[in-house]
Length: 315
Image (cartoon, rainbow, N blue to C red; front, side, top):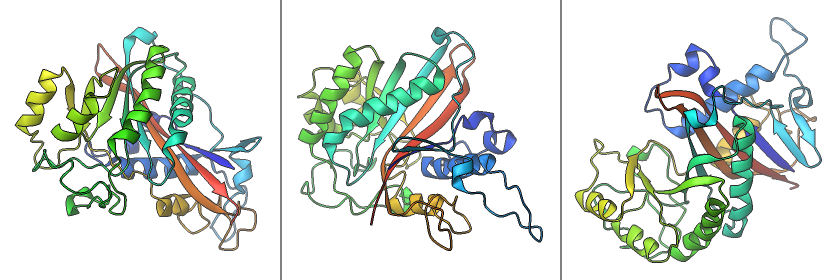
């Protein structure tokens, strides 16, 4: 069964959402927003000794065929004309998911965002490949290690990089990029972007692209210092450099199981801990997408949120 998890618009959740630290890592923002949205949709009907029981997940989710929406979701369309907004979407391809699924994953992610915002196109689509972490101290080290070597996670990553996931090879990235080029040519996306590419990886990537990325988004942990060789190379190729605080490993399997589980901090979607009503099976995250709609003339983020898709397979 497919699970579609949504945060709804996290900018409309009141002061507790809006006052989050500006540099909060995306994995924390994602998981806390999912928990908050799930909790908001759960409405216990009975109270025993002051402790309300968890309602059945069936009362606050919606099911269609073999797809479960968590929670039951209502879109939050943009309030002003489309031309008033800059809409950016970042799609996180997750580790251990076959790359040949990415074409359908990308289209599904875009369709969810377009439906959510009530529009027909997005301005910028950035894709994040698994196992890549930008190193501001050694921007030319993209391929110093063998391609099969694991990507190390530093203490500063805060768990954002999966130490057991090797960086993806260029050929696989290019195969994915071909599907993105087609989506852009169809008019669904105006510009394409990549994340965490140093000079070496970027150079090899550009040799094989038909449509160049217009943005390279990098996570610079060391006082936001962008290496000069990358600045010069990006300028030469007319690629805009943007910094971010997103996690490559944004939704590990264990974290997802905690969120959906039947423990104290879980939502009761999965069976266990006395919850016989939950879904049986092993849950595996497939992809995560983050979307942001900014009102151009005011620089205000009107709509921001996440969708995450997972599969539950019988054990």
